[in-house]
Structures are given as C-alpha cells and as structure tokens.
Length: 438
Ligand code: GDP
Image (cartoon, rainbow, N blue to C red; front, side, top):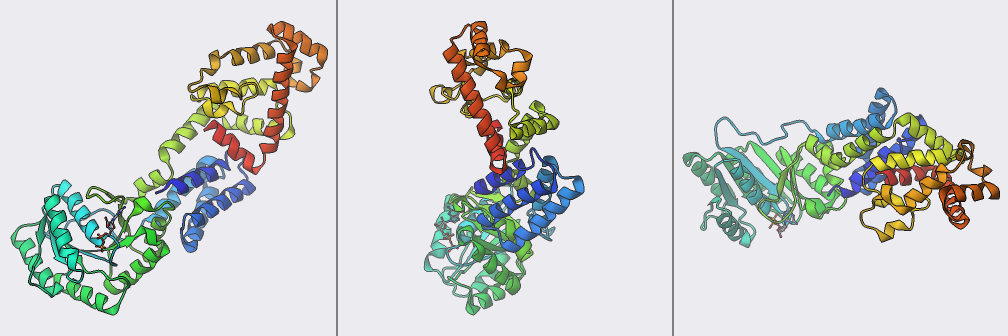
C-alpha cells in the first residue's frame, strides 16, 4: 500500500538531518520527486506537491522538522478535495448512493462492503440490484447479501434498470431505510450506452452520493475513467478498490487533485470488512509512517542534539573523528535501544551482529575491552588517533590488560570505520548513517 512511499519520504526527510541549507533542501526535494514518480503519482500532482513542500519548508525555515511538517501539510492539502470527506446522511432518509464503475472494477463487492460498513455504524441499509447487464450480477449480490445479512431489492422479471431503481427507492422509503445503495451495470470500457443508462438511473432516483469505483491496479487509468464519469455524472467521490494489491500506492494521492472529488474509501481485500474510509489526515499519518518517524525524531532528538550531530558530521567529513567522538556515539546509541542493526558499523563489534539475537552491548566482553583500551589512552591520544605509535600501543595494551595484537586489531578496525564514515559522509552516507541510527 504505502510501503514504497513511506520509505522514500523517510529517506527524503533524512537528507535534512545534518544540513539545513538550500542545497540540502533541493536534494531532499529531488529524492521526494523520484519517489513520487516511482510510486505512480501523476507528474502534475508531483510538481504541485513539491512546490507546496518547498514553500512550506522555506516559510518555516529549512530544517528536518520543518520539511517533515511541510510534507504532511502539503499531502493533506493535495488529498483534500472540495466536498465532504466522510459519509454524510441526509436529514430525510434514505440517503441514496449510486454506485458506478467499469466491469470488474470491484463495484458489486464494494457495494456489499459499503453496506457492511454502514450496517456496522447502525444504519439500516438496502441494496438495489440494478446491474441487469451482467447475468451473474444479481445472483452474486443475492449470495453476498445473504451471507452478510444485508437487505437486497431485486426484480427477477425486470429488464429496465431505471424501473428497478425506482422500485427500490420506493421500498427504501416505505421500509424506513437509512441508506439505499444502488449497484449499476459496468462495461469493460466507457461507452455511450453505459453512460446513457446510468444517467437515466441517476435522473430517476436523484442520488445524494455518486461513487465511482476504480480499480487501483489500473494505475493512472483509474484517474482518467474517474474523470470521465465525473464529467458525465457529477460523481461525489471515488472508491479505490484492490488497494491491497497496489504496491506503489501513488494513484490515491492524485485522485482528489486530478479529478476534483475526494477519494472516499479504499478497498483493501476481498472480504466484506475490507473497506476503509480515506480521511486525509489519517492517511497522511499512515503514509508518513507517523509512528516510525515520530519515534525516530523523538529518539534521535532525545539522544543527539542537532548541534552535536552537525559537529559530528563535520568531523567525520574531515577525517577528524576520534576516540572521544566514538565513545560519545556509543553512549548515544546505547540509549537508542536495539543495537543489532548498528553493530556492523561499530569497530570491534562487527562480528557480533551475526552471532547474537539480542545484544547486551553494554555488558559484552567486546565493549568492555574497547572501553578499557580507550580508558588507557591519554586525553591527547583520544583526540588524535594518529599519535598512536608502537610504544604507545604497547602501553595501552598493558593498561587494558590485553595483548598488543588485540589493540592493533581494534585500532585497525577503528581506522577503517573512520575511513568508511568519511566516505559515507556524502549524500548517500547520511542515508546509511540514518539507517544505522533508526
Ligand atoms: P464488478 O464487475 O465491478 O462488480 O466487480 P466485482 O465486485 O465482481 O469484483 C471483481 C473482482 O475483484 C472480484 O474477484 C473481487 O473479489 C475483487 N475485488 C474487489 N475489491 C477488491 C479489493 O479491494 N481487494 C481485492 N484483493 N480484490 C477485490
């Protein structure tokens, strides 16, 4: 669903972790752009979204927090279309909902899902079987409605969907139903006969809502057909079915903006309960992996203040990362909880990652050795690892109660790690470093 998007947004946000200038923002926006296009978000929507994110970020002052908030804000703006977002019932029931869509889009299934959704909210729902085109459609509805204890109106002898729809509306009124859901015929593609028929049904029952069910797997075509239906019928909302199978997830982002009507529900499976209301704010939270990002920001903010993080980055870049910084980092990481993912990056501990499941880093032999070695260094040596010649190494080994081989091995690993860190301190590096911390 939002997996690809969520990950990319995080990567983009991380670009601003150690830098807060125009260049870093440009970089982050570029990452965002690539991710959005890859997730199948329409290029116009992408452009619009990026412009908004840039403007909001600059307004607040470039920084990670501002960028994150700008994305959330802009996403909510893009996802919010004119018109109501939730399901609004008429003051004079029944609320009539006309279901439209192409054949195979999931229209009939969605009708049942919506019926179930409303029934769960204590509404009395009647479904009208007005798809007289597809032979099995009425039968399918009969079975599904029986299975989910939903009332169904059908007319076995009827051949005119307008007539059936009118009768269903009468029944909904006399039966004091809260909602009438009218399933209509779909075709494989938009054609005039289909449009004329549904327009006639529309005219006969004057629906409060006209939902267009679009198959998420059809990508940008879902948006195009929704726009055609909107033009012909004046739809009030889109339901995106089969969203569970959509790994890109970007189509959902564009509908409100491109079609001008809100995306109201998403279908997330074949069962009757697999329908979710699409509410911009909630969705933004989900797309952004809010729990994760919020936790991440909390975690890292609590552990490393930004100034310190920037200083550390500078030192790494210049190759000035020393043993004190290293100890500092170890202290910070200790507070981050799970260590396993970080182990591979810590000199002297890289071999542990594969061996252990839950690492008690603080009490590990390796950590104790490292601390003993650094503890045996003079303050100057800790500041300037290059000072460590053979005689100093010997002294450190004695002080730490270790062999010189062990000291040499650790120093070598530390050197390599510092070199790697320097190499990684460019664009890609920050990403890796962030992944290590998160
Ligand atoms: P209609 O011709 O538009 O009425 O399409 P149907 O309602 O008969 O659905 C076509 C197929 O799509 C059926 O096999 C449904 O089970 C399936 N389907 C509908 N909605 C979803 C959904 O949200 N997720 C998944 N995985 N399958 C769906």
